[in-house]
Length: 102
Image 1: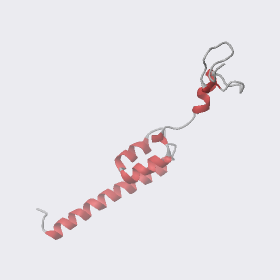
Image 2: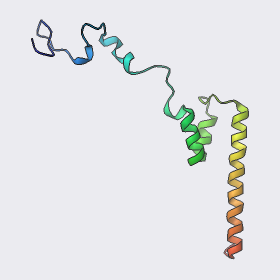
Image 3: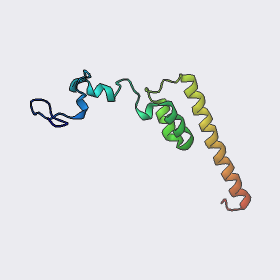
Image 4: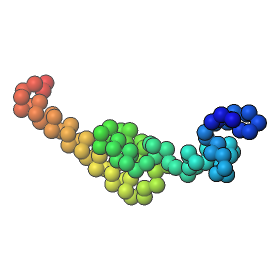
């Protein structure tokens, strides 16, 4: 009898863990958990995209999969819009000070 053969000569893989009660049917249950969130629905990635690539972050935040309270979503959206407006006004002020604004 070889390492990966049973007493009848049939080959089996190490995945089966003979003698431990594991079967092919529940082998996938060991690897995955059905209630895990997708990576783009996790809070870390939503905040990451809000900071690095804010339009994508806003879309991910407002999706129904995000469980944040609506008030939090509104405040974050207003703050981001304020930052975008402020940065645009600052860039226009720098261009006007340099005399390149027509």
